[in-house]
Length: 343
Image (cartoon, rainbow, N blue to C red; front, side, top):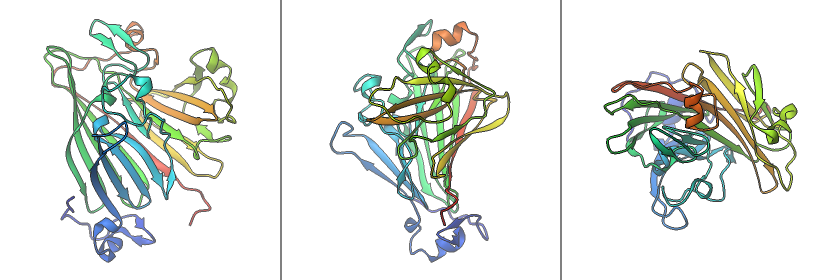
């Protein structure tokens, strides 16, 4: 861990009732208020996988280098925000999607497909693509003057086929209870490629419970199938958990070329705001399951307005070509909404 030598005269924001600048001066070490540490799991289904733990004021964040630097559990003042499945995060390629989808705050789906398994001229694509089974090369992990920053590179490639490089930057500003995720996808291959990416933001109990509200920027919300149609009238309010609850998926039609945000707010007032740009992420899906053994609400910004896989996206004309050497910039801002009663 390295501390940046660059400083502002007085940094914005607060940590524990003091300005960031004063908090860092008073601390014997910056690690008292902000740190980033790497560890290796030694047992269980994810033995041998790396973890990066980022602590920045009220946020405690788990990053997963062997899952493309996706984001695992996140705690705000000790309260878990993300849904984590019972599978955990076994080593990439150890099992199929259903036995290895660990959830977490952000699972990246892509880079060539999301949705159910699909086949096209470029080959076979597993459920939600290959990205979350790829290991990242971590290039930077440090506490700076005003933020904790982690940067990594992930490559998805086949021999003489598609060759995509994703450069990910996770920045956690001090004193803001915010996570900034920025991705640059570069086509390193000789021919054009059509990336397809979805950010699977998974929120769980206690944030998600009966009465939790989803506030969407959509002008229209459409159910995917009959199971979703049964809950279409109440898509915005999370139902009471039941012993059996078929998963429901809704498509949210968004305004074009705008900065938008979706909010998930518990009855306590604690919540999450997910901000993104519809010029690069023009679609959003909602996934919910209200079962006694695990309530989950997914908010899923995406590059294409279909959740039915790559072949369906191609047939609908929803794929965009990325020329050799060209790049896309995608990303999310995830903010904690604080309960007004907090001090």
